Image (cartoon, rainbow, N blue to C red; front, side, top):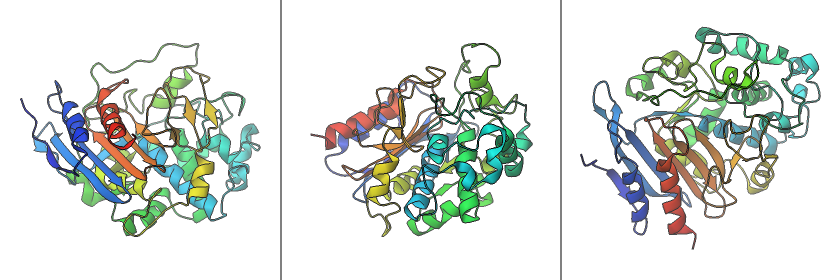
Length: 382
C-alpha cells in the first residue's frame, strides 16, 4: 500500500521528504508528521498515515501527539530562560528555590546536577497509583522526601519521569506558575500547539499511541530494580509507557502535568518552539545565545550508573546533545528525543527547529527519525 504524503517542502529539501516517506515502509497503521524551520521559515511541513487505528481517522497537519521525553527538552528551555533572567543559577543548590528538597541529604544537590541526571533521584522507593502520579503535590512531596539512590554527582543515571518534577517544581517555585502555564507564555505569542497538561478542547483530536510489540523488558539488575521502577512507579505505568488503553493512552496522564514525559504537541508547534530557541520565529526569540552556550556544555557523558538504560552519552543542562547513540544535525545541536521514535531539537549553527512525531512506538535503534535527520544533514551541512 502506497502512503500519501501530505504537505510540502521547499526546493532543495526533497530528500527530506523522501526520507520521511521511507519511514512508513512495512508499518501498517502508522501515522507521523515532520516540521522543520530554518531561520524561522518552514522548509518542510509533512504528515501522513493514520492518527487513530480504532477509527481510521487520518493524521492531519494539526494532529497533536504525545511527545514523551521531548517534554524534558521543552522544560530545559524554560529553565534556561529563568537563568537568563537571573532568577535561577545552575550552580546553586536546588533547595535554594525549593527548601523542602534539602531533606534526606539533598541540601547540596545543585540545579546543574538535577538537570543533568546526576542527583540520584531516578526513582522513588514506594509504589504509586495513576491518580497519585497525576497529583502534583503528592509527587513533588515524595521526591523531596526521597534519599538519593546513588551518591549525587558520582555519575549519572537517566531520570525518565522524575526529571520533569525536578525541573517543573523549580519553575513553579520561581515563577509561581505551574510549568504548563509558564510554557503558555511562550507558546501563545508563537502560536505553537504545545502543552504540558492537555486542554479539554484538544482531547478529541488527540491521536492514539500504538504500543511496541512485544512490550519491552529491562535486564534484571540486582534488586531493587531502580531503572524499572523509574518507569513504572510500581504498577502505575507500563514499561513501554503505553498499552492500548493504559499508560499515556490514558487521558488522565495527559490532562495532568507530567513534564518528564507527558507533553502533547503538533509537529508544527514543537518545531516552532525549538526554532525560537535559536532564531527569531514569529517575532520572538525565547533564549539568547549566551545562555544556550552555557546550557549545552556537556555535563554528563559516557556510560551511566546503569549502562545502556537508555544509551545516551552526552547531556547538558537537561538537554540531550549530539552523540553516537543519537545523531542530531551538528555537534552544536541540542534538544531531546522521546519514547517510541519522537525527535525534536534546535541547531544554532544552521538556525534549525526540528520535530518528527509518530504514533507507532518502536524501540531504538529507530531508522525513521534518524533517517530524516540524516537527509537534512546531507542537504544543509556541506
